[in-house]
Image (cartoon, rainbow, N blue to C red):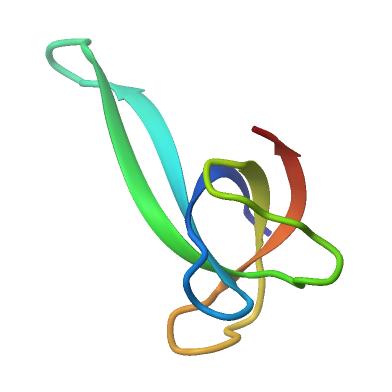
Length: 79
């Protein structure tokens, strides 16, 4: 199962956090570092995890929970 780290960018929906995961890779020809980001809709339990915008969290791949949610928040790492 995939485990990724990202930053919480939105908490507008119930039990769902939008997490932005950024990755860096070297361009094959020019060897410049390129940053790419992707947003994941993640399920989390409001009672056990207190999230605020810009928190760094660890997310893990799960079975499909809804049309867009395929990840869940495992733990809060920090600010």
